[in-house]
Length: 158
Image (cartoon, rainbow, N blue to C red; front, side, top):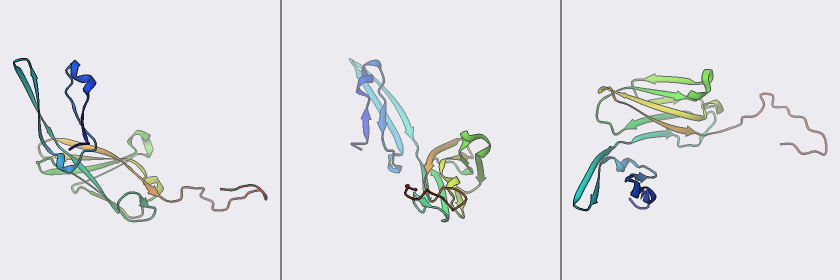
């Protein structure tokens, strides 16, 4: 897994034996064990890593007015009950929420307003709720609604 894996060497003396994996991949799913030996004592802990995969079709960045499909899947073993998509949650009344029994959200004509923070939340039959956040990029024109722009002769215009 090198070079994606690191230990926080400066924290080892304070008892922090955290393992950092950047970036996490689907194949990293599984059970991890840490063992710490100090004199004659051996301490161990087990951590299970699950992974959520967010897939865009077409891949990001998406071009404005294209059909966009977003799917969200995880390595969790229970059966999926519901998938909810949250867009721009922190922005109050402009935020949007979509929920369905499948894991896919389709947007027929992607717009610049669809860009930004999205969170998929997966709810399972064993009452487990898992979520992941990602940033959607849309390539398009986000200019004035009136396409006529006036500029003084001899000046620059963008």
